[in-house]
Amino acid sequence: MIEIVGVEGEINDVEEVIKKISEFSLEHNVVVQAVDAERVYGKNHLISAAEHAIRSFKENKNTTKSLAMEILLYAAGVRQIGDAISKMGIKEKNKGIALVIIHSIPDLKIGGSLSWDDIKKLIGELKLKLNDDILEGNEAKMRKFGISKEEKATVEKDKYEDLILEKVAMVDIIK
Image (cartoon, rainbow, N blue to C red; front, side):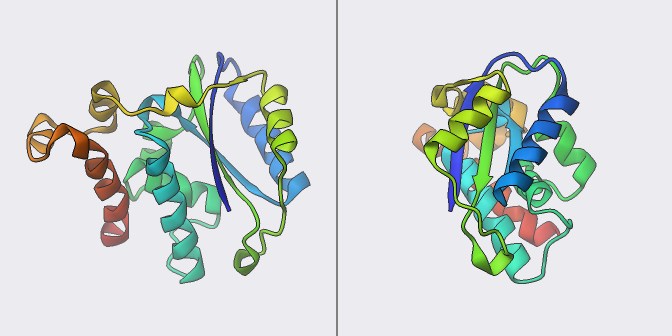
C-alpha cells in the first residue's frame, strides 16, 4: 500500500530527519521516503514514482539497493542517485516535505502495516504538521522540476500533470 502525506514546518537538521525516518521504517517494517514538496506536482506524481519503483524491484530491474532511493530516482525523473538527491531530496530550510510511505507488500518482504495514528506519531516526532495542500501542482513547481516552456506549450493546462508523469515513466527507458 502506498500512502502520500504532505507535511510542513522548517527542516533545520536533515540528518536528524533522515535518522528518525529510518528508525520509524525499521520499527514498523515499512519504507518511508521524504521528498522536497516544492518539486512535487500532486499526489499522483509520487504514487506513480512509488509504483514504478516497486515494479522495478519485483522485476529485478532496480538501480539501487533501497526501495526508498528507487522512489527518489523515479520521483525526480532521473537516473543518477546524486541528481535525484539534488533535485528531490529534502534540504535544510525546506518548508514542506512529502512523505511516501510503503507498507504491506509481501512480495518485497515489506510486511508492516500502519495506522493513521502511527503516521501522525512520525509527523509529530519530526516536529512537522500535516498539510496535504503543499502537494498541489502549480507552474512554479513545474519550473523547479525542469519542465520547459516548450514542453508546457505542447499540452493544455489541465494536462500539465501528464508532463511530470511522463518524466517519471521515462526513468525506465533511460536506466
